[in-house]
Image (cartoon, rainbow, N blue to C red):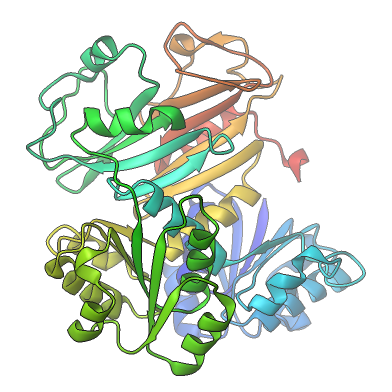
Length: 458
């Protein structure tokens, strides 16, 4: 597949890294010669310096025979015009644009994004993706990472194990015997910084970070087995009243039980806008790192503290202060992946990586095969892929134990019709089933082959 990626920032670079690593023909376009040079020297791709929306630049990038263009520059308008030029002049069949402005997103319900107007096939909103990720973190407060699959019927949970975990030093195959009715599988383990797919004989140790794929109805039981407890989120404090904080507050206002929400926003105009758009949420204007203002927001009594400003350091420091004040759970939005190892030492319970959520969303729309969802784990170290099994797939009609999955691949869940079942070895995978696979990054191409990839999908 020939792909043009416009924008060599964090998101564009990460998408290029994924696609180039899977032997696609990738060209990256950016105004910054330094960013293009970094990408072309580090990754197996071509680089073009110039305005992504200019026809001559797209011509040099190979737009005449491109299969897909991803417009992920920092400018909404450049991304929209890029898709327009790609369609009108080069007839590129599939166009994805990243848009941030709420006004453009509000127009999504209209017919603005269609051929004849703005020919954009998929609109990606980082703010909406991050807001959804924040809500998922709040829904599973004992997990440091979480993502929904199978239309909300299952969850991927990232759980940090401590000395209180009752199943330490127990082989995973014994866990299956001990909890035979539990619809949950450990699909990934991070130990001393290394992520791997565990074998049935592997044991779990204190300080491990594990990824568990669990049926939504079994979430509380799963957390208890690994030494965690479900907590009700009655009082939530949010630092940052921009698009992300506003979206989270609106969603919380609509939830059953009506949790009490407070927002602290430094910019007065943004704070006033948030106050106008929210009904029950209290909005305070001031610095979220200020101890007195946090005390005024009763952070010490809050069940959850969410720092979602556009500054990583503000989010980290505000979360640390809230934790030291007595808040039960603190969550920080962190753009820079090099800061993620600090989460443990800083005693921050969970994080949101906007780059990972946006990359996952884009990958979901460009993977071959009948891919329904995808989630990128860590620094693009692994993925969880949810896909429908096609008739021509090599895995159709086989028992799970007989499928030649690579060592870095585990089946997390299988849905037959409307029924989600635990994927034991004697379960047969049939055409039309939906399967969720944990796969290390190096094994993604083989997984796509097993899912019967075909460019006809495009």
